[in-house]
Length: 172
Image (cartoon, rainbow, N blue to C red; front, side, top):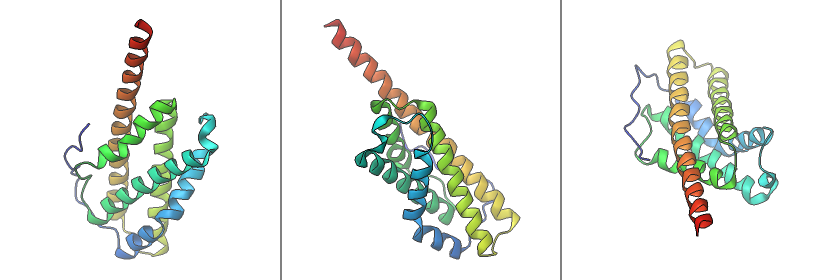
């Protein structure tokens, strides 16, 4: 995997400073909300309730949210290495046996929570114009596409390696 080029989008309207400031200040509570919502998805591995695993999901939510808020604040796409860092969660989940569909559903859910937080805060600040809504929506969806691709690729690479290792061990 590589960080790839920054995603270039059409005209971009910056989020109001008050909105990004509030989102930055609320990264931890929003990440906890994302983690709880992901925990409500069915089909999670039995060890999801273990503190270490929950912390890893929370950390991934916090990292992904921080990256997205930075993107929305500066109006630029993902930086080199962002996808490698964020996508590494896919490899970890593959090693734990989490189904890929569940992992991608968790990322979709997280993007939805973030979008609702961004739009909700902008509406509370009464600083939301249609151009900004379109731009933010485009960036959130683009981010979801990018991170889903990176997570999926890391997941599949890890699963393929695990199968090869298992086959090699069996053949010995």
